[in-house]
Image (cartoon, rainbow over all chains, first blue to last red; front, side, top):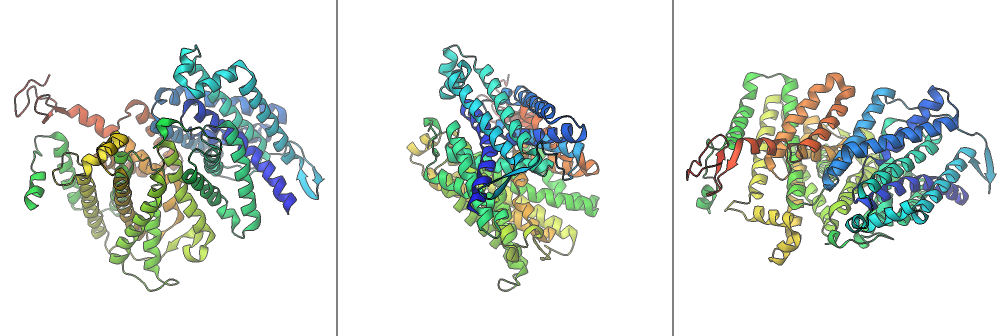
Amino acid sequence: MIEGIIVQTLVKGSVYALLALGFALIFGVARVLQLSHTAFYMLAAFGIYTFADLLGLSPVVSIILSIVITTGLGLLVYKLFIDRVREHHVTVMLITLAVAMVFQELMFIFFTGQYRSAPAFVTGYWEILGVKVAFQNMLVFVGAGVVLLITWALLSKTRLGIAIRATAQDTEIANLMGINVSMILFTVMGIAAALAAVAGVLVAPTLILEPRMLWPPFVMVMAMITLGGLGSVKGAVVGAFILALVEVLVVFLLPTGAFLKGAFALVVMVIVLIVRPEGLFGVVFEEERL
Amino acid sequence: MLSRFFKDFQGDVVAIPGRLIALIFFVLLFLIPTFTQQPYILRMLIFTNMFVIFAVSWDFVSGYTGQLNFGHALFFGVAAYASAMLNRGAPLGPHWPIWATIPIGALAAVVAGVAMCLPALRLRGPYLALVTLAFPLILLGVIFANTQFTGGELGISGIDRISDSRITDYYISVVVMLVSIFIMWKLTDAQSGLVRTGIILHAIREDEIAARASGINTIRYKLFAFAVGGFFAGIAGAMYAHFLRIAGPSSLDLTLSFQAIIWTVFGGIVSIYGAVVGVYILYPLTESLRFISQFRMLIFAGIVILILLFMPEGIAVWIRDKIERQCPRCKLTNVSWRHTCRACSTDLY
């Protein structure tokens, strides 16, 4: 059982880490909660279904197509809606929520609410420590790990990464130092949408696809980035794995666990916010403190 | 006391277009059953009235204190479940009549409001939004896990109706709605000589630190706002459950919380009438779009996006600014097509 818990945690945690990382990047740089984030995850998963199952394209082509299209949509959403009201936090939250609803309803119109599944990219399994691990799950873990490493390298080693971190620290000073802040925000939105798309693409074959699939990870991602500290990239990844462990433990150990997994994650979030509002690795901004 | 109460209501109604419109609207609400008694229309209006109470109570909690509450459905759902469980009786004690279950349900929502406020005292902005978002979802998980008390997915059904005839239901909903929004409007009226809460809540929203420095116990007033908002949202939730004769998990849903916000922001936040206008436009609109039901939520979300982009203050405030104008000298509200003030005849332009 312990082996099962470990494997499940690693697989789930790596997907959550991808989602939470993108969300944390946007919050860290623009200080807005972009609530349509998991809609891009849903869109990418449906992209895989469309290209690989309906159109019969090869897995690699359909992966690339879904990620590119989803990222493009993310950038479009940013340009059309978020950019104009960026200063008003409540408006951004409401508008991105409405955008998520629009995407969900569009998927309902195109694909109806039927449960669907996408074909696995690779079949077969290995036995590790007596647990059968499907290649698809290993692909999720390895793929997510590689993308996380690439993102880490991008943020810490390149000029763009330095500019992004500078903007996150202080937008006005970054602007004075000659960084094109709106261009940075645009790029970050693209990176975040791409990360959500990678997560969606990787897990699409292991999940049941339906338009409402964006809400369960939506809630979990909120809890994760709070646990890690809003806006902290490292915290988002750590929080993702901790809450994935909590979720897997609840499902494994409690009889009615499947209903309570979200509730437990949210209880963890509430406790963190009450005991230590800045989270595990968060930075406190003076104007946000009471 | 009584003279102060009357003094508070001395003021022009006919000369100010916004108030005149409100008066005509309220009179029309009472006359509607004389024009039409179609069950469908009355049913829609009853729901509209309940959601008006719900949206206005969100405006009271979040608009006026600036405490962004993303889980307002908690109050609605707690009251719906509490009153339904008491009314059904069977596994938990005796059967309670309806005139007792609705107030008790609302009081349960007050308890939930105060419990939710305790973390809210420490948090602000997006952090508070996240915590409040979490509460109804936690409760939803508990409801699904304890099906013997809560009925799980199916909810608690077969509880008493509000009354036997639809017209009585309608009048009850109109009267409760008017009394509720009137109380909340008075409590938030900054110019009121009767209660001080209005001006204090405005002060907290504008600058909490300054309000505290002026000796206002902001924590007490935030608790007050959450309790009052929870009470009225609870009344709406309990009445909704008794009208539908079922309390189900959809009354705690994320979409219900967001709808309260969307209705209020659409009509105009921090103005009680904005929420009323928002619900009375959007709810019948989305209901009447039922015949193209697959596009219903799409159109709803589209309208919200357009309003937020082009009328960020909300439609009611936008219209009010078009038809009313404040005199620069005596601060009296005038019809915007007058050239001189009606009291001091100062030039308005």
